[in-house]
Structures are given as structure tokens and as C-alpha cells.
Amino acid sequence: MLKGKHIILGITGSIAAYKAAYIIRALVKKEAEVQVVITPAGKELITPLTLSTLSSHPVISEFFSNRDGTWNSHVDLGLWADAMLIAPATASTIGKMANGIADNMLVTTYLSCKAPVFVAPAMDLDMFAHPTTQQNLDRLRSFGNHVIEPAEGELASHLVGKGRMEEPDRIVEILEGFFSQKQELKGKKILITAGPTYERIDPVRFIGNYSSGKMGFALAEACAQRGADVALVSGPVSLQAKHPAIHRISVESAEEMYQATVSRFPGMDAAILCAAVADYRPEVLEKEKIKRESTGEMTLHLLPNKDIAATLGEMKEGKQRLVGFALETHDGLHHAMDKLRRKNLDFIVLNSLEDKGAGFQYDTNKVTLLDKEGRVQTFPLKRKEEVASDIIDKLSALLKKG
Image: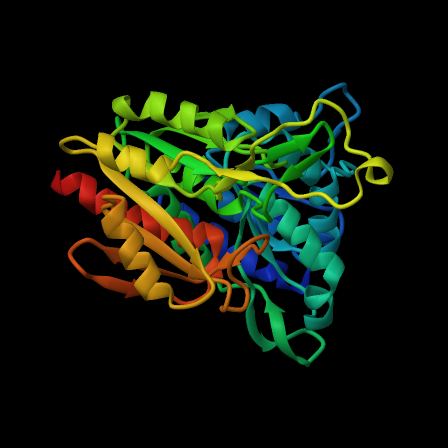
């Protein structure tokens, strides 16, 4: 899967830099072309001569390698690459990448790179566990970068803990796995809803919920990566879709989401209803801000919103597939199975607020998949990107069966 692929290998100033030699050798054996970009600190730990010999390319470290007017173009490198791998990645480099501090050739190349980026952290356990490092890694993930989690083991400090760079063979396997991803959804059109809806009370207040949209956006990225064209109907969230095959339709209210979803569903192969849609809206929308001093006690009269899932369940035809979500606080399996049947879903994703680390705002989720044949699959707590992959695996199988 790596044959003919152009790989930029970024090396930083970690003692794990020696492992880069093994990564280069493994990539070259698989017929990939490797261009090394190394930081000045990295050169203190492994020599450019070694890296150049293994990769069969001059090692790039500085913007200007000679005084004759020639220079190394980070832009050209970014366009050349099929993937960029930073291994090892120190806390310093991770921080610079997360915050756009382009003070060396490696980070400027990263900022210019249009290809997928893989980051393999390597540092002492306390540095890795520090909130700053974790925040920077989360930020890189939010940009769409792939973080290769470090292993636990003995570190350069002779302490034992998490921070040891993943082994070279495993890193290469991860790259191979990425390039061997199936495009089983190529040609398919998938409709996904995400985020909350806001139901206005007056010009400054609304009824809403805590949904961040992270799960829905992760599902959209997973579908697009597998070749699907995605229509993402999103409530008001700050997230941005990254894949060019994702077309975002921004809405605010449940009624707007209903109209956007119902109008598009007939042309879709499947829909995944991940949004946390408000069940009710105020009967009266005040044109001016309600004043507490003049209003005193206030009662809101709420009307039910249209049921998007039930409507699409009635509209569903032939080979179309419909996936719903159920966020429950008690008797989850019972309520999810009831919703599955009532709304004519093909399967439903159950998550519970009783599970620590699952639900609104978290980067992780713990789900159970229930289908109309009565099959139940329960998964452990995972990052939402991994949860999305599990859900799309099941949807892909259903679409393949037709």
C-alpha cells in the first residue's frame, strides 16, 4: 500500500530520534519515497549522513542550505507529499504545530502540507501528561491530524510511564492501514445531522442543549474518507468540516433542520440523525427582549417540534438506510429499541449520560448499536473518531447488502 507514496519524515530533538532510521528503512523496503526534514536539535541526536544514506535523499534542515540564492521550498514539499509523519515529535514541536509557530523548516513544512499528517509523540511521562501537552494534542486532532499514541515503558529518564514513542514497525503499519482504507462508500450520498438546535424565546434568549456537534462531525469525516458525498446539516456549533466532500448546511432551529433534512433525503442513500434536536419550541417569539423588571414571573408555553426521524422513517424507500441516535439517562436499551421500531430505523446508536466520558461535550463516547433484527453490539469508551468508524462499518455493511 505504500509503494510509490511520497512520505515526509519530520524528526525532532528527542532521544527517540534513533528510531527514525528504522522507520526510513521500513518505508523504503515497502517502496515508499522518503524525504527527511529535521530540526536543528534533531541533528544533535542522529546525523543527517545516516538519514540521507537510508533515504537516498539529501536531508533538509534549514531554509537556506547554501549562500548562492538557492533555498528549500516548504511549499513544494507540502505539495509533493502523500503523507507527513513527525516521529519523534517533542512537546516543543507539538506546541509549535498547534499554535502555528513557524520558526523552523519542519513546522513551516507542516503548515504548508496538504496531505494527512501523523504525529508520534515522544517525551517523559510528566511532560506527556501535562495539561498543556494534552491540550496541544487535542488541538492537533481537531485540525484533522492523526496522533499515534505513545506506549508505556522505560523512558530516557529511567522512569516508567506513558511517553515512549510507538515502535517503528507499528508506525509503518498505521501508515499502511491509512492508505489501504477502503472506499466502499464511493458514489454514495449520505445525509448527516449534527449539533444542537436553538429555539428562540426573544432576540437574545433561546432554548437549547449541550450538544457540541463533535460526534456528528466525526461521522461526516468518516463517511467522506471512505468516498461518500456528505450533506452535513449542522446546528449552531463552532466546528469546521475538513474534508472537501462534506457540504455543510448551517441551520439554527428544529424547523430549519427539518426542512433542510426532509428536502434532501429523497436523493440520499442513507441518513444518520446525530443532532440533538429540541423537542419543543416556544409558542410565541417575542420581538423585543423580555424585561425581568416589568414581566416578573414568566411561564413559557411550548409546542412540540416536528419529528425528523419519524418523518424520514415514513419517507424511506427501497435501499435507503436510516440511522438514529438515542441519548438516555435510564433504561437505555428499552427506550432505544422502542425508538428504533417507532421511527422505522435500520439501527440506532445508544449512548447514556450514566457512562463517564460519554455524551455531550466529551471527545470520547461509549455506544451500543441495536438493529431491527435484534442484534446488540456494545463497544468500550473510545474517541469519537473511532466510534464514528464503528458506526460507519455497520452502515457500510447494510448498504452493501442492499
